[in-house]
Amino acid sequence: MSIRLTDFARTRLFPREPRGNTVQDCSPEQFEQRLNEERPVAVLDGYAPFCKLHVHRNWTSTRCLTVPVTDENRHLLRSAYEARSRQELPVLVRWFEGVEPPVADYLVVILYSAAQLAKEGSPIDREWGVVGCLYTSEPAEIPMAPITMMRNALGVDEGGSGVPIDRDAYRRAVEFWDNNANWRP
Image (cartoon, rainbow, N blue to C red):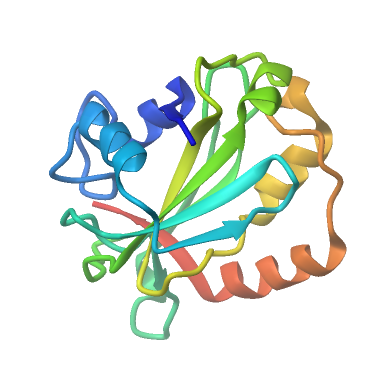
């Protein structure tokens, strides 16, 4: 299996201005090379047939992606309307400020097939493309954010994949994200 880091993932995982909530201690080229050379601990099915998740032990100092919401930290939650790219419409997001999660035990790499990426207007020269990465304490997927599920259901023109909403998965995601949030340094 050959893997390419997509431009979409590159800007989110390895921004020009490094941030504490992105991949640490590793260049985009080193990340891609490691994914192509190292066997994952597990391979999980994604939310659609074109999506796979490769679970790797964290070889970096990258911290967990999410933090549980508690009465003690709820006052540190922030929110704003933001877009992931210039082409997408802004959506409401929330995150913690002033919270530092533990170093993640796993990197769960989200892969899309080359055929799906071509359909979305982002062709690659490999079999699979990295579209994201979850930093977790368990070798498992964090539920997709409900807004991402909605964007996917809207279709490729709105920055999604065209996969309809799975109502049960959506409810599980709401439960998770109601009790957890991303963080920013």
